[in-house]
Image 1 (cartoon, protein in one colour):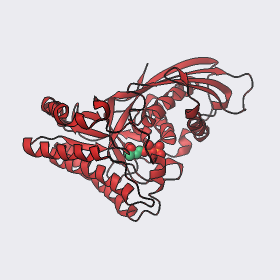
Image 2: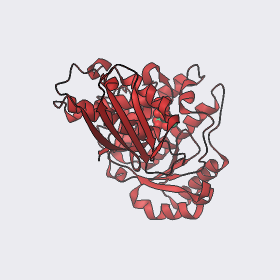
Image 3: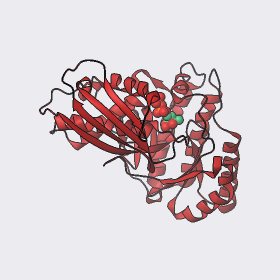
Image 4: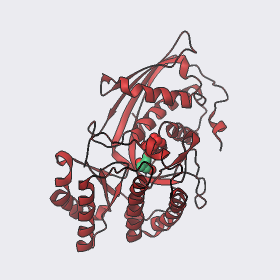
Length: 360
Ligand code: DP6
């Protein structure tokens, strides 16, 4: 498929007004997206677990304007209050997707959004937020073209989300989503995420993710700036190649359920992501001392108990603690006894693998 396949060839129905509400989950990457080309095309393929509890719910009310073709017309409310500082992000998103949703200037939109996780918890909300918004707009697109298949609906929602925030394209479906051209994955694309198409061992069913909130402050360097620093990065070529290889090996791991290899790939990906930040120009560090304390505790616990708990990191200081469901009791006990002390205000969020966005 190409970008042009997402440009509507005309609409069969006219819609005056209405409202759509979608809830979209966050996701946690196992093989990381870090570095991109023009138009939100990833420099390497990535794969993630879709989450279940951490989610954004967005409602979009739309009313057709009598005069169209002016500037985009919208109001934005976050948790019930007007949110001026989110508006430029929406403006940029609308401009990027207008070609694929040519009706955007014909309506006034009221966007109301809220998160299931505490505001400013440091849990990235751009993936869940952008995918929920894209799904609401797709709802209108589908009403104007009711012949659209649900397969195409999801693909285009993922395609549009990507233009808002790359990782958002992995939040439409679940439980495992891959994004980016990869030789060993049929149907993979740089343009949208696809549901992981191969066999997955049942040890990954209901896989757990406890998110430890180590630092809730504003990040010093945004993901967008971090991605940019992969241009002319001394290790970029090797890193992008490594992601392809890790993804190929992960396919075997998903099939055979080898958790030792799973752990080795996932933890190496997390540390490589942060190593890229530490070796870019300018260099930066997003981990905090408590991030490292937690990692060391996880390694010690795993060794002592022959357990299968591991960690991964986003572009921040928080730690995602991943473990199989059959080790839930001992791992949660360990988290409460030994890890929660390193969290800001002892805060953490128990999540698990989920099945994608839902229409409300
Ligand atoms: C470290 O998707 O937030 O979480 O496309 O600029 O919005 P933009 O970046 P974003 O980057 C996410 C990076 C990551 C890794 C990942 O989720 O794959």
